[in-house]
Structures are given as C-alpha cells and as structure tokens.
Length: 593
Image (cartoon, rainbow, N blue to C red; front, side, top):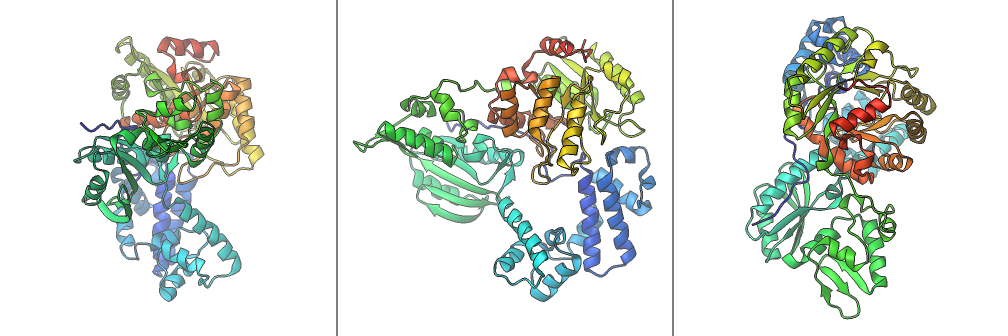
C-alpha cells in the first residue's frame, strides 16, 4: 500500500480569489482598467476617474466591505454610482465583468507590463506596437539583448524590476504550493509501482516561499515508474528526464521534480533531497571524517566502496553520531553544532496547539457567526478561539458600542458551550501614526486579549515606524503585536523596521509577538522567530482567519515556528485554557472567565 502523509491540508479560498482583507486588490483592478483604457486612447475623463478611484481604495484604512455594508460607497472621494456598483460587484462575486472584458482586448501578457511603475503607458504602447514586445519574457529578453529604446534611468529601474520578476518566476507561497503538492503526492501514491511518496526540498523544510516541488518516490522499478509519470495527463511539458528522475510542468503550471529510487534507498534519497545544499555540504564534511559519504543511494563507505543501507533518516544521522535533525532546521544555521552539543530543541507540533488567538467574525470583516467559529474550533480540537475583529476609534470598523455588544454575545454563547471550549473576547486595534492605541480604555480592560497592529504608514522612515510599534507595546493594555513586520509574501516586502529594537521592547514590556499563519503573511518570519526565542520572548499563533477554513492555516504557522527553533514552551497557544487564563491574568490585562 503506498504511503503518503501530507504536511498540510487546506480547502479554503485560494490566494487567487478576492482576499476581502485587502483593499489593494480592488485598487489594482481599477488601475488595470485605467491603464488599458489609456492604452486604447479612451476618454481621458474615464481614465482619470478609474485612477482616482484606485488611489482612494489604496489609501483606505477601513475595509471596503464595511463601507459597503453601511451603504456609504458613494461618500468616498471619486466614487460615483457606476464605480460604487462595480465595487459592489467585486464584493459579491469576487470578479468584475468589465475588467475581465477589457483584459481580453489586449495581448495576454501586456497587463504585467502596464503594472510596472518604471514604464509609462505610452512606453508600453510603443514597445507593443513598434517592437512587438507584449509580455514580461519578451521584455526581459529584449532588455538582456540591449534592444530596448529607453533612456538610461528608465533602463536602470526596469533592470531591477526584471531581476525581481525573474527571481520570483519559479517561486510560490508555501500555503499555495503545499495543498497542490499534497494532491499531487496523493495521485502519485495511487500509481502502479509506487511504494512510498514524500515531499522533499524547501517544501518539506517549510520555507515561506518555495521553488520547484520536489517529490521522492520508492519503487521496485524506478525507470518504469518515471516513464509512467511522464505519461500522466496532468503533465503539460517535460523539461528534462533521466532514467530515475524527471522535471515536468503540470497543467497548473507547477514545476515538479520527481525522483524514483529503490525501496531500500528511500530514506537516503529523502534526506539527500530535503536538506539545503549548505546543510548537506556540512554533513558530508562531517561524514568524511568518519570515512563515509552521503548520497541519494545510501551511506557510502569510502574504503570499501560499499553502501550502508539505512531504513530511516535518523539512522543516517546516527552514523554521524548525531540525533535526527528535523527537516525544518536543515539550513546550516547552527543545527549541526547544536546536535553535536546535544542542544537541539524539541520542536512544537500541530498537536501541541490548543487554540487560535486571532480569528475575525461576521461582526467585523469575517464571514461567519460566533456560533460557527466556535463549532469550527471544536472540530479542530481546540480549547479556545480568540475573536479579534478589526476596530478603529471613529465610526469605522468595530465601534466601542458594537464591540461591547459583541463581548456580551460571546459571554452568553460561552455559557451554552461545553466546558472544554471557550471563545475569548478580543480586538485588533490600529496603531496610530504617533504610536497610540486610540480606543475606549475602559472597554479594553474588559477584553480577554488586545491585539495591536499597523496596517498603514508602513513606508515611514525606519526610526519613526520602529518607535511607533515600540510605543504601542508600551501601552499597558496591549497583549500582542500582530504580524509585526507587516510583510505580504509575493506582494509587499518587509518595511524598514529595527526588529532588534522591537524584540527588545517585547522583552521589556512582556508583549507577545504573533506568528500570523495567513497564507500571505507567515509573520514573524522564521529568522526573527528564532531571535525572539533566544531573547525569551513568548510568541502566539493566529490565523487571522476571515473564513472558517482559513483556520486550518495554523499548520503554516507551526511550520514557521519550527523553522524558528520554537518549542512548546515558547508558544502561548500550547497552554490549555486555564493556563492561558493564568498567563494573561498575571499580566493584569485580561478578564478571561
């Protein structure tokens, strides 16, 4: 019977659907429309209208869905009846028919060129009409051949954009790649001649962004299995193939590397294709001191030329006098030295997680009721889920009055739930430009969990943004700093923040730092998770789920925590409900009952 144990399963919304937490997606659609209309020489008034609407949406601090619920779309600058109707269509269907029609009127690859800030619409039109350049690959080819008729400053800026595009071409979000890789592995496990299947490479290590999907298979006839794999209907293109390996592109556009070995070689091959190149190089140096070499076929004895067959990865590490190093740590970042010293951490697992400390409900930006979230939490085996809808101080977001009503509703619901599960009443408050948490203090004191975050102003100077975050953590009622770096994977890099100062402030103030497990965030990044751990900062996992199925992304957060060398003792979510209550109560900022 083929064996495949998926690392991660998630059946919620994919990243290609409308993410209702991100006004930027709506803004991008309107910018697309304006650019295509300008490319086609349309009415300048219509073009300006769409550009202004895009600017308005991008600058909003409140989610557009909340504004639409109040019927206040037309009160926004530059949003008239037509644009309000189109925004409503986006909210209701996740698509805009006019946008989809306009895309069909230009070459398929032209839209990415129109989105490049280094090229004007007029320049894109000239490249298309005069030089037949209508896609990023064509643009990159012409750039490298020095055939672009552009001035030096434009070429310099364009070179940076092309380099970034080329770097990202074969990289995917962990949360996008894993579910697709799981499906692929399950299909491979059902093929003839397959005895074992496992993910390898950066996916198995849990990297936030991954390249090719690496899969190792065990088979009594590896060449025959590779031939069968190459014949599968999901294969769109074979990039390279050897008797026991193949590199293919699937119908979804995924680049997949398949390796087949004999069953006795499976553990060696899995280890060989999992660790980073630096980790493997360091291990091989260690192996040579013992007269061994590590290969995909087994552990080679250098003096005899014979292979020592191993049945598990732990056996291979044992031959080197080491305990087994978890896949997430195999980056040559001190894990071998820690293993030699007997100081490898016992890493947190998904089974250690007792609850989710950042979920949004239909009271705010979420899609589900408190009752539905409680049911989902119990299905996941949790003891608690914290409801932390977004709030602002004025009439936007969850107002104090509405929050008070929500808290009362949570308390009433808890009285009807099994004693083994509770909802926590929390809030996600925006950090103001001067670092204040501008919300009703008396109400904050009644909450179980207060989360502070910065969604806007992330382009401020480094010292100003850092001070803003640190000042918020100094607030006596703030428990947790959410997605501290503000990065959005594949969209927005990490703003200029002095993270060392943020971590030190977290230690001084006793503030928890979040590992946000949303597909687009995984924030804190694993490198800062490790620094936080070494400083004694306690971290907390939160899915920031707006749809119940997004609560399953907790697995991504756990992988990030493991990459940051985190054990159960450094993670707030591993506490049982009563332990969590005691921890929060000790800081004097909660009223968990």
